[in-house]
Length: 479
Image (cartoon, rainbow, N blue to C red; front, side):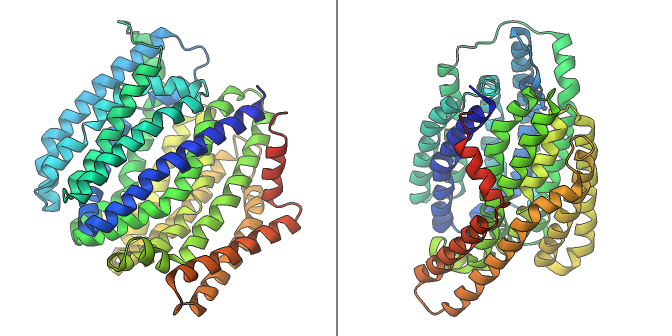
């Protein structure tokens, strides 16, 4: 199968997985948000950093190393399996005994049991991490999708049942745990690989040598990604954190999801052609242009009509979260560009630069927090937008040294999309303002349709727009 055909097939199956299966989880969380209210989601937001840290440390960046290792064998797989399980058990033990201190910090006693149950997911994921990594490495995205479908549906069923019957925060916890338990079981059943009693110190040093820098980068990233949760959870109410947490999740979902789909498919592909720099650079440039073309209008267009969307989906209780969502959309619009630039560092094995950039990026975040903390939550959010733009510029400077794609060329390739997206969003907001007294569905539908028509029309007229890249890629997917 050709590179383009493999890429296209992988993206299609991963899109099905993400937008038709995992999207159900997103919709289920919307329903739970309407049933449970901001406080319950604020509680989950308080422990998000610890859940994220546990996952990152448990993996230690070694599955990434396994994907990029060309001649991995049973010694690699078994060594990493036992390392993942051992580290996960250690991490869970630490968090289990730290739960009372975490609950005391946030002054929420219920968090003790929530943390101890929720974090069992570290062990569950560790037992099937290698099976999932092998599927990704071999580009078997169809099989991954067919495993994720029953896993997700099982979790949704449990979560909605508990949420409807008044179990509060526990419905969120069990929804997630059930999904991972079923997924882990199905990965074992569907995979031919089984661990053997093999453990190679040589393999451990090789994979850990690459992975520990990614792990440290991810640890730092996770802490600073959730630092606003910690600050808001500590100094404001659970409801305020609930508004922020849900807004962040809703703003993150389209950007991170589409970026994750492309990264998931292209990381192993880019790694496999890392020696053919010309082909890698060509594919990489297409990815940047096309992904930003689809994500930017989705983020800014949704932000323009956020108020009627929140009212329709979540109810009046969640309207204070609208301004949080709109500001976060500006920052997260750049997520795919930042993610692809960082991905190049992993493809070329530069985990040292990956770690260095993570330190620089989060140093910028700290400065932004210190500068805006006195302005309240809204000030903190605007600070995150500024930090996001500055961080992207720094990351692009480093990645451009590894690949023939200078910073100004990247900005030039994004400028057309940014220009027409801005015009589209402004137009949508003006149209919505004139319709503010109309039916809620009309307030959403008419600005959306007119915005889409405008965006596509300009894109078709301008022959160098990324839309033409996407059309060409689809037409030539079998070549």
